[in-house]
Amino acid sequence: AALRRAARRAPGRATRRRARGFAYSSWSRSSVSRRAAGWPQTRCSTARTATRRNSIRGLRRSRGVGEPRPQCSHRPRSVRGSMASQNAKSLARQGEQIWAKMPKVNGEFFALTYGSLVVQLVEDFDDIGEVNKKLEEMGYSIGTRIIDEFLAKSGVGGCADFAETCEVIAKVAFKMFLGVDVDIANWNDDKTACSLILPENPLNENVELPPGKELLYSNILCGVIRGALEMILLKVDCYYVKDVLRGDETNEIRVCLLEKMQVEMADEYKES
Amino acid sequence: AAISSCRVPMGGWGGAPVATSGQKLPGRFGTRRARSQAFSRPKREGDDMSECAFDSFFMELLSKSRLDSDERTERRGFEIGYRFMERVIQTRVLAMDHLEVIKLLCKDFWYGIFRKQIDKLQTNHRGVFVLKDYSFRWMHQCSCGTDVVLNKVNVHVLQFPCGLLRGALSSLGLCALVTADPPSAQSTCSFNIHIHHED
Image (cartoon, rainbow over the protein chains, first blue to last red):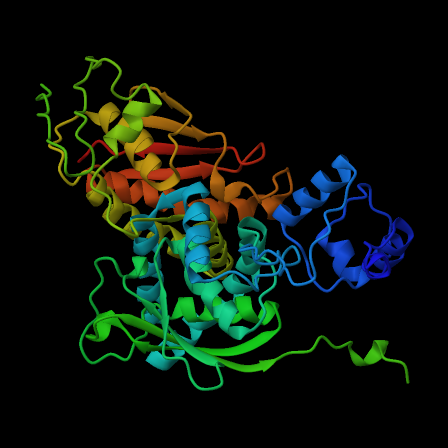
């Protein structure tokens, strides 16, 4: 029994230092060092305090062979920054917290400005398809910049997969920038395409489209999503499926993942 | 003689009455709390949006409008200012002189767009007003100096708020000419309003 205990002893300081790879200031028995040193289980704070308590008292409680380890309800704390354990509710809460903290401007003025922009584009271009494309391009250039602001202000870490990315866009990003609660639906089998359902669109305030026009009024949103995701190396196709201004009940934007881009060096930097 | 405006109940853009000339109502537009109360109304979901989203949209709009002429940018600002002023005075009953109109512009209109008021208002009491804003949000990124080309770009950017003011005045029934001085210091702007007395 003593031999078994010795074999399972916590990794010493030298082992931990080697496992960690670089110096850190506090020599705590942190979960990171444990995991790096190869311990099978990351223990939660309950277990940590128990360990400290035992070592202060100077005795090690030996458990009987048959006694099972006490079950702890705390899930292992994931590595900082990973969103593997977050779910939709916590994202929604996060979105609301950030929305509460953001300085806000008048949505009506924005709706008016956007409306006059669309009117001007419709006057300039004869083809409505051109107008849609122009709106999307404007959204694209906005999206390439807004992703930086989003990542800075929201503090979300890396997403594990595309499904989580879409969750973050719907619950955190839309809430943070426009103040709308967006739902996700209609996933396809591969989990590479989804629909974002906007119950209300602040751009659509007091807007009426003339009948028969194929204008996608809020196409700028599709461009923003596409631009933002392209900056984090996800090439997506983003388009409007349903629009309230054209008679449907809700606004629906379809986001389809085309490919995950690789960062490559330009030809002149590559070694021959 | 100016007719005193009646108080409008809450439910529209502010229930605070506008003072007649020479009569200051105590603490109405002075304190910040009164300011926000004047603008509080039953908020719909999605009524506001975040500042950074609007700023990035507006920067994009400005960069696109750099190809347009000054006049075109100004005309766009005119239309937007006209409509926005209509919303600002939706439930007020107004019969005011020029100074009160300009004060409405400085306080409610500017607050509605930028969440702050105009910092300084000067007038010669003969129809010329100078409005100064010491931290104009849209000019934060614009550098200023004595360079002629830079000044032209800055003045072009300022055509849009000039149009806003002109549209706002026009919706209140005043015909005016609004110009902007090239900014001398970082994000400081001044707008000159000449009201035409023929109307």
